[in-house]
Amino acid sequence: MDLAAQKNELIRRYKKRGLMRVLHSEAVERAFRQLRRELFMPRGLESRAYTNRAYFIAEGSTISAPYMHIILAEALNLQKGQKVLEVGTGSGYQAALCALIVAPLEPVGAGHVFTIETLPQIVQFAKENIEKADLQKRVTVICSDGTLGLPEEAPFDRILVTAYAKEVPPALIEQLKVGGQLVMPVGRFRRFQSLIRLTKVTKKKIKKKTLRRYSVYFVRLIGAEGWSEK
View 1 (cartoon, rainbow, N blue to C red):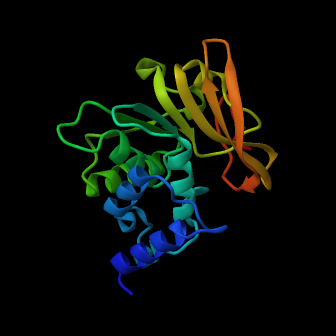
View 2 (cartoon, rainbow, N blue to C red; view 1 turned 45 degrees about the vertical axis):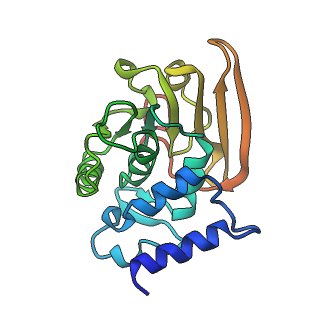
View 3 (cartoon, rainbow, N blue to C red; view 1 turned 90 degrees about the horizontal axis):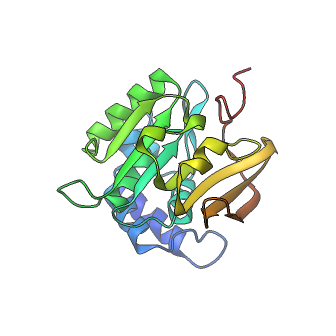
């Protein structure tokens, strides 16, 4: 089965009623169909782009399974024209998927995704992948401590954190626009992580919703307001 057929089969499974159904949004489906996941896979694993599992990239970083990319994109409730911050770039695939939703058409200018990664090697990998997908005008990759956010570009309509910590870094909540939403895995132990969504109702009022309880598995969020590197 070629990659296009594998992608179509995966979409069929993700839309099927039952426990495997994760794909509901037409905008997310369009972006998933458009984006070539094989461009973001580690070298030699391109043929496995549409297998339902995560793959190791380097230095503790991974590219999540396709279903998790869809879950995260849908959890964000993305809209065209929004400014998005992603913390934890990895392969660059999630940022690219989000960019196709918030900035779907040329000319670019309405929506944009900023994504932060701490590891220079991973930053370079993601930049190359995003360029291969011709999305470099819609996605900006930055090498920095993502737990501190990106104050010079704040506030953000949406913030996505793709690594877990005990709690949401205060800097990220501060940089979220009123009315904005933040999605992140939280937990004290690696095997007990929950996916949550925060909505900033007012400057001081935050509404929390647990989307998936103890059923997600992400790498640690390293940084000043996350885990230490040890």
